Length: 381
Ligand SMILES: Cc1ncc(COP(=O)(O)O)c(C=O)c1O
Image (cartoon, rainbow, N blue to C red; front, side, top):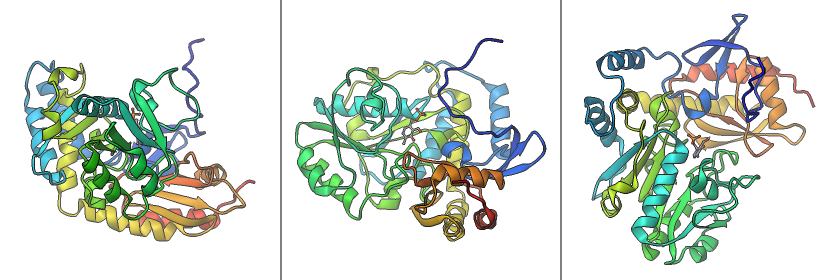
């Protein structure tokens, strides 16, 4: 066979045959604790029985339907999604697509159409996806396209003074990840998000939170808005919202969503019955008593477990954690050594920071396996 995939990913030496809950099962039967969770996707862990029942029933009942037809999973999704939303006096409206990048494209499109402006402010270290508009506001090493579709203005992360001057009444949108994940789970300095909110209110720019990673219960609250106590005008999510099925959601305050023509938006697959049945199940599970308590308890246990061996600092919230390694080693070397001990973690753009983004069903007791692996690992220089 001569056909190859484009060489986009450096694949790990991990012959995975199957997965169960928070474990990957290798060809030779070994079990690896998955603290990467499919990069924030596996909200409910692998092979969740409740989700399997929902998907199987939905597949036989109505596997797909054009967006010209309404269907029960859409109503169930909206009903399940609403109670978890941050409070907004005018309520919210949502548009369904297939990925985080698409969700961000639509958020930016909405903001620029509503404000009739052509400038977007974004932050150093940001990642919002690989399509044209999302890439234009991502701080990646390789430029994705020769031109941005709007004027994109990059400013330093978490510096209120600079943000104040950069955001004026010619700016249509300010987009940010409440925790910058790929940059190494860097948190905003205290009061920064409040200052952005205030400045956007003064200038009329729309504040967009990219909750592709921080959303769907990951921080121990349904959304980052509740974690930080700052409500954006628009937020986006994807990854964990479908627990393994491709989804992108653009969620906008009604006063903005109803101020632009609906015809700006469209998607063939987005909002299909199977995906929305999955998203409804995820939203219901997040709202179940004890679900987010477990996220917070497991987060505390992981933070305690991680602070040993080569790890000198832990940052982040809930089950989105950044582990800073000491100056003698690199995150990649520690990741490889942990893998040899049966624990999968992620790296980040910061060569000193590992990332944990496990299933939200991980239990506090699972943290002991990380502690043991960090204590006994042999890191190659
Ligand atoms: C914060 C953030 N936004 C957007 C995206 C893009 O999502 P997708 O790969 O689903 O297009 C990602 C993907 O890693 C992300 O981490």
